[in-house]
Image 1 (cartoon, helix red, strand yellow):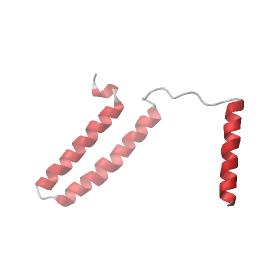
Image 2: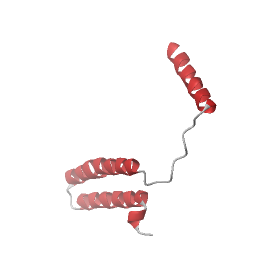
Image 3: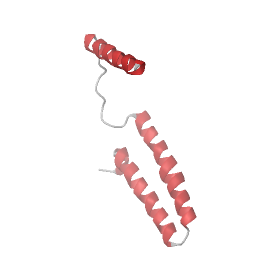
Length: 88
């Protein structure tokens, strides 16, 4: 299967590539550039790519929302826990 069809695998391969490039900078005695490589590219760009994957919803289909009396009961239970835990 091609990498473009699996965005999570594409993200992992891109991350490995960026860290490998940072390792090459370390081998060239350019530690500052290696740290910048990891912080800027492997950090910010990979997080941005993760948000794009989440926005496009390319993963598996999500389960439907809990609606009806079951959802109302769960919401009331969670609200009660939140209110009682903040009062203590």
